[in-house]
Image (cartoon, rainbow, N blue to C red):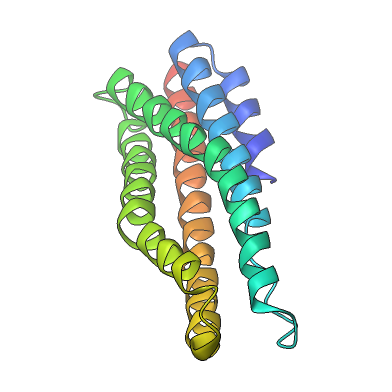
Length: 171
């Protein structure tokens, strides 16, 4: 969660109101999204635990985080895109555009890859004959989930870099 305060501080230190607003939205969105992403994974350490209980808990946690995280990632992407457009012609535009692209890629990845896998997990949870495949799908989901966290961190890093470069322009 360390990048969240950095992003907010970088935006607050900027003399440009657009940079501050964009950095604040990116900081809030990316910081909160990373927090929700981190806490959303299923507990897979205990192989003896009931698969139905693991999937039910995963579903409850996922639905809660999806309600919060989707809008946050959209706000982060919009904030980064707005800041990138406002920073046109400066060195800050490229990292801010990268942050927006990473956020949009995260949305596409979640909708196109993670979402269908999650629906498969939910559909196969009650199937007693294929519990190994469901556990393997949960492990795959956990790996994809970690990839989403890495992309969120990269997006936040690009946003911080962009805002710091923007501050150099106005300093």
